[in-house]
Amino acid sequence: MRKLGLTLFVCFVCSYIFPQDIEIEPESPAAETKEVSESYGKDGKPYVTAAIGEMLFSNAALVLFNRFVLKKDYAMISFDSMYKNLTNKWVWDQDEFSVNHIGHPYQGSFYYTAARSNGLNPWWSFLNTVAGSVTWELFCETETPSMNDLIVTTMGGFSLGEMLHRLSSSKQIPNPGNILVGPFNAINGLWQKRTFENPRERGEILYTDVSFSTGVFNTSDYFFNSKRRAQNELLPFSIGGGLDLVYGNPFGNKVETPYDQFELSLKADLARDYYAVFFNSDGILWSLAPDWGKNVYTTAGFGLHYDFIFGKRINLSANSIGLTLKQIMPINKTWFFSHSTHLNYLVMGASDYYYFRSGEIPKPITGEERRDYDLGTGFNFKTSLNFLKPNWGNFGLSSVLYGMTTISSSVPEKGSGGFTLININSVDFDYKLTEKISTGVSWIIYNKWGFYDTAENVGQYSSYFTLFLKYRLI
Image 1 (cartoon, helix red, strand yellow):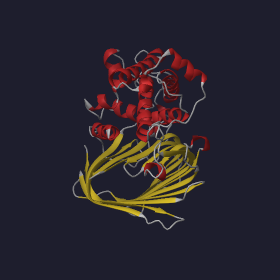
Image 2 (cartoon, one colour):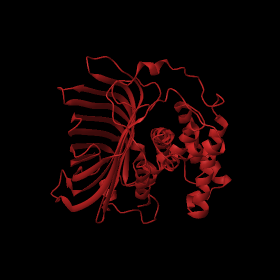
Image 3 (cartoon, rainbow, N blue to C red):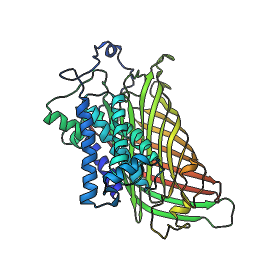
Image 4 (cartoon, rainbow, N blue to C red):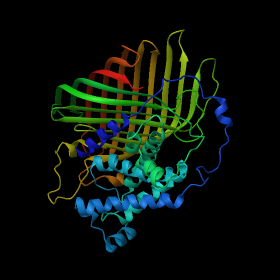
């Protein structure tokens, strides 16, 4: 529940964002003619030493907190534990889902924003994140270094870090919101009395919607090859909230600096003895804006994605990279059609393993850790279709497909490798009541099929139907 609270806190922080109305015109060619220096800042130099120092400071602060406040066994480091970590092989660790797939990307974002706030570009900041993760694994824990931690900390840290850096640097976020979103930006700006401005980073928050919802949730677990009855659960009442943010123009945008354009969605639902947090993001690393017809605005390039679902019944995480295509075009004088399509390589994914999560295979009596989810790689396909009338409302359809093959060497004792297919479909309709307020309905369907080598194949179905009220911040 601490991790749930952390995610809701991030949602609260983001609610300080003040957006502008969305534009569908392509980027102005004049923006391309601005003079751009190789390094930027008031003195023209990035501060590499400060970036590394702040990365090491964040590691030291966290390990001291874990050791002296939380008194965690894994924080009781010594020269012996460091030598052991330097000489042992890296492993696939057994930590719980919230630690590995929410906590580690958030930790990685600190390494990343430490570098960005000292003037380093995204790629050098990524290397600082790698260095921070390696340093943590080798010297800041007694546990054997973890390969999956390194992957999710660096990839998730890049995704989350660049978004937080952009938002905390935006003049559209008033204090204290920008300080909470990006503390390193604020700290460096105050005590070092210097700021970095890159004319290539010219994105703006186009819009931010905050929503409040109530709805119905039901779920079912079923088995393919046995006569066991499906296990069903119905929750007739839930409350929730969400945030949808678009930064930079999605359409007709030639992106040369990573995350000049990105989108994120955060949603939380609570009910009696139930909780779920959904987070989806995609950021463009590089793109072209090809001319594919009159009044058709296109962005085509490469993107990076960090997604997770953290809930009582569902755990899912995905760090993906791949191809991106976004377009908007008129249907007639008043209606527009837009779509966003992504075909990705799933570098690291995680999905709950039913038999461990349900307790059918009990935890070891000796008490050692054993994670209740699989680690895998595979593919990720996302698409969304929207039919919108600017002064009326929007009708949207979306589908996400994850295919994960279990990493065989990562399977815990009594677990099973295999292949997992996850499909998430949604239908949304919102109607504008005023310029700022809209209302509507949303229906999300989650389907999962687990095909295992040595365990019975399992399916899972979940459905969320919600009524929402949405407010566009100004």
